[in-house]
Length: 618
Image (cartoon, rainbow, N blue to C red):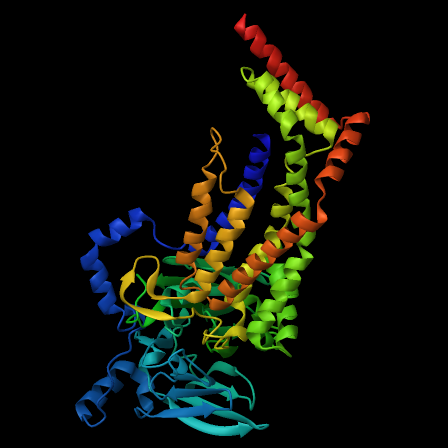
């Protein structure tokens, strides 16, 4: 009976580890109570869904000005005061290199289209980070004649030139022949980063210096991945503040935050990012807002989150002078590491603590090395094999503990029978037997817990590995997204409208692993979880939860469990010798056992508890 208890403890250790991982990636799903609340507010949700087709109220652009209507033009110039000096024009100017294409509108002087030239979405559409009005950028300020203006409503005059081989676009909202607000964009030949300067000249008497000038940047992240819920879990605002601290807003719901001394803010859309960074001197403060736009898995959902950032800008002598950067590009560690002075690579969510350290500095470079000469799927398999072999000593320790408990089982059964009416004495004598035999009842759990950092780090590796994006293997078209072997004509809650094969294989493998570990005829212990139920539940959980996850992750779990099963069979059949273990235990019993401080304290506590129990019966 006691051997089974030890087996249960080992399995509980594994279940705890797996449960923690399930919690990590599943914590953002709504609870049943939240789902009921959502149903009760169906009309409000429908209203919000309609609003999602356009920008939020604080980022909605004004309608295009009818330039053929002289009255409308006159009204515009009257409304903007001195800035009516610039003649309205609805044209755009393109800046592009071989990596990215940007279109900047005369209206607002802002970027109205950002297209990745080397990447496509899952359905072969070019990757757009900005398109069709999903983004807005502008400065809010008050003029000396008490007009409240936003630059996104002003018209700018474009001027294109070159500087050292770089393309330069100057957009000026003029308030006179030599008075203007300028946005200056400078694009390098082979770079995702664009230098962006905000400066003014001759506006110290036009801008009201006693009122704040606020930079407002809004963006609704365009859906780019096959599974919108999966993509949304890794779509978030990340920011650098106070001497390179990194933080982020919630990915599971609406959130907002205010921080001081901000270096950059990143609107991360899983595998692509839009980043605004300062080149010199951090922003004094910044207000961040994130609103979740995904209610459920749906092919019709166009956007994942609505992001907003508001930053007050200082005036020096009544003028603006701020040197910034725009980054529109992949959330790829190899690319972002090029901007070491800004630390943009910290915007990637590798995980927290030791888990993130292992992911970033061990598994990411290791996989990069393997995939440099192996196909991407094969590289996953090879990495999994090497990791499992490296952790095989922990597997051996766990099995050795089980083998020792098997040898001690007859003596444990005798103690259980002898002290069946005295639980305290039974526990005390059992601990004495463990001590004499040199067996630790926790030795089966500790190896599993030691593997947790590696287990979780690899779990986080696949969602952050840009190298896996749109890389095929066997029937999977994209290792960073789910594989599909059949489309369903209906949607199964928490599962989806398709069948993925890799999660099925991984679930089968973990079922056999649980079968080998728990045994088919394990009796139910009083007060303990039903291990047979857990044995069947775990594969089902994996099957459901991983159906919409990256196929590379399911491939890893499938191969990892197969290798673990193989290692367990080798240890059980060719390495462990029960006769030798029995002889060693008998030798340990003969040796005088010296208690350490902890063991002595535990024994004294148990003896004291037994005395109190006896005195209570009297």
